[in-house]
Image 1 (cartoon, rainbow, N blue to C red):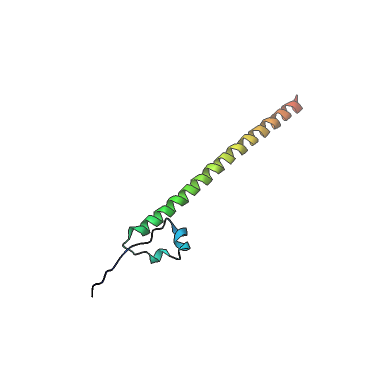
Image 2: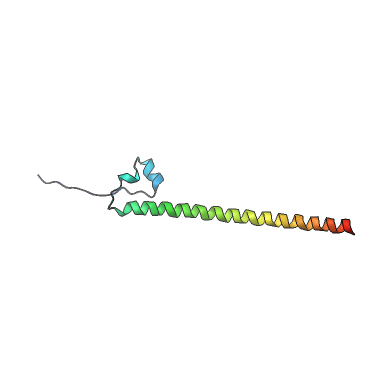
Length: 84
């Protein structure tokens, strides 16, 4: 009797998709590059999220710095006026 063994990996783009399909990273064969691809994709996604958060916080910091500078100038003007 002839037997055919088909070895393949599920096509998933990340851990979230694996979980939706009821799969875990441990379900992937150790010799398969798909495991590495999934981990790399997750790492890149996390890095992109951190970069986006950093850029947003840097922009917010710039706005707060401008407010602080403006308030310091106002305070300095008030002090100069009071001393005059």
